[in-house]
Image (cartoon, rainbow, N blue to C red):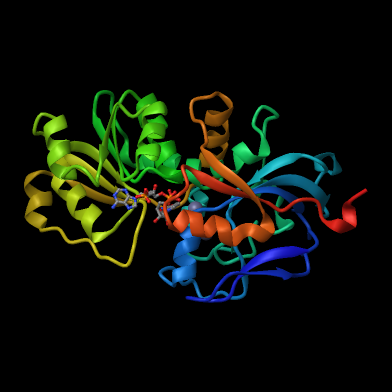
Length: 346
Ligand SMILES: NC(=O)c1ccc[n+]([C@@H]2O[C@H](COP(=O)([O-])OP(=O)(O)OC[C@H]3O[C@@H](n4cnc5c(N)ncnc54)[C@H](OP(=O)(O)O)[C@@H]3O)[C@@H](O)[C@H]2O)c1
Ligand SMILES: [Zn+2]
Ligand SMILES: [Zn+2]
């Protein structure tokens, strides 16, 4: 089968012919129909994120159909439309025992990070990681749920926005669009910060009450103004550069929660006195639980959250998708369509 593979930091991804892995006991083979492209893939490419596993098939937002089942999996699942939960915890550690397998220190697999992912015609995963998709959600529309929406669901639970609180979504992309809608649905007041008019228009359409263009306004000052001087209760940092982290820190109010989702090469600096006297919290949020994915699917099925797909591309045009993402041209996700393999065309 064809797959887009990572070969190490600062190396280009390559489309290659690789063997697909047949499903073992309790596993399913998923024929991929849609694979979302996440900004994290750019961090692999640049070398910022280096998990040391090469070569590796990229892609952790994966939707498809069950094409084969291993021993112990009901043949009734053949043909089922599914979305992949990309972590496989050890199942025994204290994090796995309470369902936090995204924190497992001994992951058995993490598709698109340390295990072969979904930029491919097929991916093989445990049956429990193949989460059923309702018919009302189309494959392409579903792809960004796998990371974009689940990350938003998870981060929201950590930050716990309250009715009427000011929530800033800093960076309106794949993850940010999910956060805007979820925060709005909780009754919070949402300010979206971005750099392009098209993305900020989309942010307003999805429920941001106010948008701030970082190219046109001093972000922290503007947030202070908008909140009557109080500052934001929650800031979801989806960029993580020196500039955005400084603005976010300056815009954070008393008891404010600064939640890191995005990152760059830059480090975060804050004087503890700020955290002490304003009782602020700095949090990190990574990935999601299997339960978060079930909830994310349900939120999209119920229309509480809409995914945003800018374009679809055949697998071989992955480079165009990555370039567009890197240049900031995408409003939402680019989704790869691996297509029907020649061997199975009628
Ligand atoms: N923690 C997790 O579990 C998790 C999960 C998924 C992704 N991530 C990380 O989270 C970050 C966002 O991911 P994503 O997939 O949502 O990326 P994305 O779709 O590229 O969105 C990021 C957005 O940030 C905007 N941006 C960049 N610099 C900015 C600035 N200085 N001021 C305001 N906005 C700015 C970009 O818009 P412009 O280009 O128009 O400025 C872009 O729309 C990435 O670092 C990714 O690796 C983390
Ligand atoms: Zn991702
Ligand atoms: Zn574990």
